[in-house]
Image (cartoon, rainbow, N blue to C red; front, side):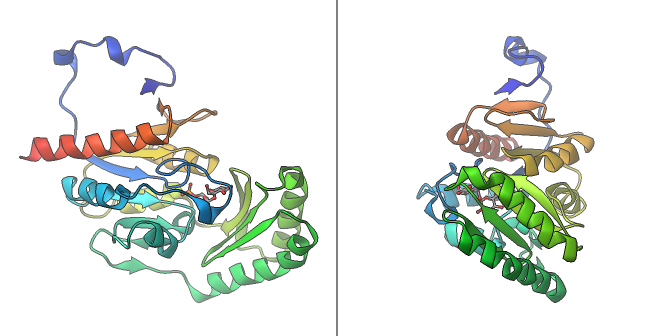
Length: 262
Ligand SMILES: O=P(O)(O)OC[C@H]1O[C@H](O[C@H]2O[C@H](CO)[C@@H](O)[C@H](O)[C@H]2O)[C@H](O)[C@@H](O)[C@@H]1O
């Protein structure tokens, strides 16, 4: 892992100069962070032991681990053997808390998401390669199979959101998304940090995409660290090379926490 400003500085510190680590709360993005990017949302390859690994990390941190994703929680569950990890889905519009209780999505927000999707259907049908992903509180217009349609996809989404003003546009990896104006990954992390067992811990957030920048800012404002996975501009203080390295560091941070608690 490298500091995004001072490459290699941390590696030169003698072991005994490093103060003991604080108790951590770990947050992780999903696509591009825990799993590699794939051609379509459904063709990701999830390692068979990943759900069990994340469950162990959560247990090692006394529950202070959460996934913060653009995907809906039910979709995360589908890919993670239905292990009920704490999670924020649909960019933070829905949350499952560490005690298993849920904060759901208001009916009117879901209705607006469906309306956005309906208004985009004809545009998508006219352009080969586009994929519309309709989520309970967000709509993703994927152009990974037709990158030349980025500009037109953005324009189409902008036109639709002139009529549906409760949503705003966020751009991600080969995708234009509509998400409710009052949600972000940063707000979701800040909400978790006010609750047990996250409260009082130092937050760390792993992410790879533009939508994760809010999350990096949130943890760093709370005295924690953002860790950017892969290349690209970021406000995160640390950078890690790739998805396998991110998974490995998350697993090791869990093991360290368990060792310290023993
Ligand atoms: O916040 P995340 O967990 O990173 O989710 C962001 C979006 O991820 C998914 O789309 C992205 O990953 C797909 C699979 O690798 C890829 O095909 C697509 O091009 C990416 O944009 C997901 O489908 C979206 O719903 C998430 O918002």
